[in-house]
Length: 176
Image 1 (cartoon, rainbow, N blue to C red):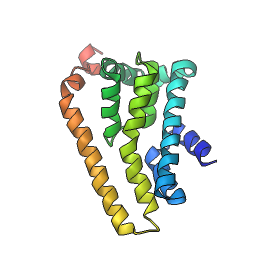
Image 2 (cartoon, rainbow, N blue to C red):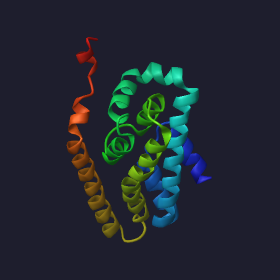
Image 3 (cartoon, rainbow, N blue to C red):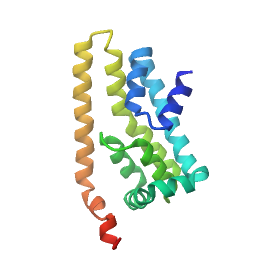
Image 4 (cartoon, helix red, strand yellow):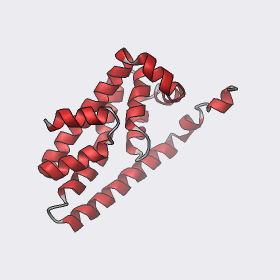
């Protein structure tokens, strides 16, 4: 029941960090981690293929510029660029999935990198949720350290691939 509800809610925009925290609280760290990862990956698959096959007109109308920018950013190295996006603690997971669903990116590298990239924050928030009842100071402290490490890893990858990001034309640079 949790997987279905979490997948549906995350598919319509509920942050996966809330799903992870709730799973950690309800099922403990290990059970919550596994359930939150499955729900997050299921949501990613659902929204990617919704955009690719069913919602093309809706997504293209609402996210046209984001689709162009994401396609330019992700298409030449889908696995590494998706991993970079997932490690950064900013941005809209739903918008990214929808935009990449409309892009030229193949599903397997995007979905595999998403699954791997979801792990750090899922660990952090499942640990934080599980720590509410058991050893909250240790688990909260460890969660903060892991979140910081994840954010720093994302920033490192961003700086390493910064030239790819700056190559993406902004709307005002295309003459619009």
